[in-house]
Image 1 (spheres, rainbow, N blue to C red):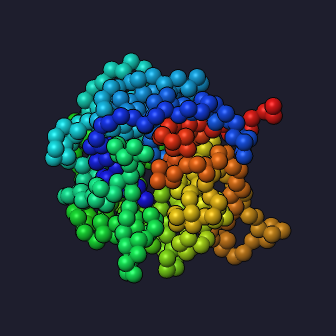
Image 2: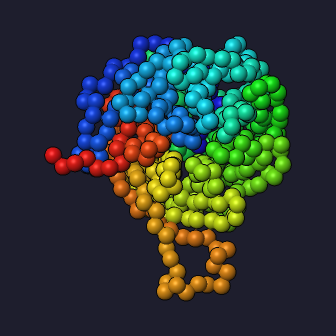
Image 3: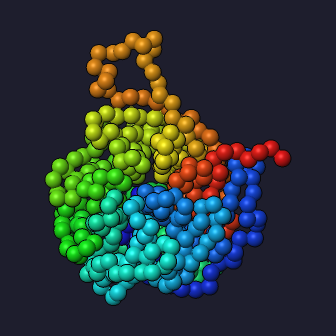
Length: 440
């Protein structure tokens, strides 16, 4: 559960200090456990790819954008060459456009939460101002790049005191996009990372802070409120294809909130996507399919016991549930551009699945479970359609600290998956090839 407001604060306010030592291993290798080729894309420690549902690729599929300590850079997806695009140590890379070759980013313009949104031409580096925000954070841009999507809170208390934020090994610099959680249980003993996070999330939810989700017209700068609440609104994202469809969540402990919602940009058709049917059932980390027709999400019935990747078809309301085993549960899932495969970034033993051996990046091959002998139950077309995700391990992540989420994304040509990791010590961006390496 990513707290977007906290992340924005970390990105804008992290103190500057000496970067951690560069990785000393090879730039490219074949994973001994999985047989897949891995390339370290980044040259500079502290480089980061975007959050898993943020678009980072050009419409033509030839480049992606990443954050670097000195600003923003582009990556050529054929040569993996990293080229500076915009310089500035306190920039926040937001996303790329789905229609134009544009990288969008934010700069903080004052101490009161004000910021300016900018657009950079990915080929020329030429920048232009898009909008000024008195407060709030930008989370998405719609398919035709006419509207920015943002959220605002009356106040943004930190989920955890600053003293407990994760720091790099030298203890001098706050790690890019990570947070540590600490809390004690009723018995006075320290809770695990995951349980402490739930405590902090619940405290934020119960604070009942007034919030808004709003749009900004890119041409006119007009601000329009889509929905307002004292619930914790988060995880905002536009459909990749429908310029007027928004998905967002009610943030907090997943077993407590009705999390996944859609709404139109004019505030109409507010729809809850998943309804709980048992206590401790959870659903979250929702994302659109690349064609915008389906919403996928992590579903557990109940939490930490039975694991599914669940899909909801927007046009028909039909549901598809793919089952996974405990070790295959992943912090985030994603879907390939051709809709044929899924990825999952695994998780460690302290996370919700408590997987004893789950620290791998996975490629999942979906398999439907058909009716036996073609015999259909009455009304079966309205029931959940079941399936399985058959796993293939892509990357051994046993040296990775999962307080940094890998956030896997498929490259547009579906030949690679890009992810971020600290498996070599510092934070870097990597790519793993989906085809297995030829035997040597």
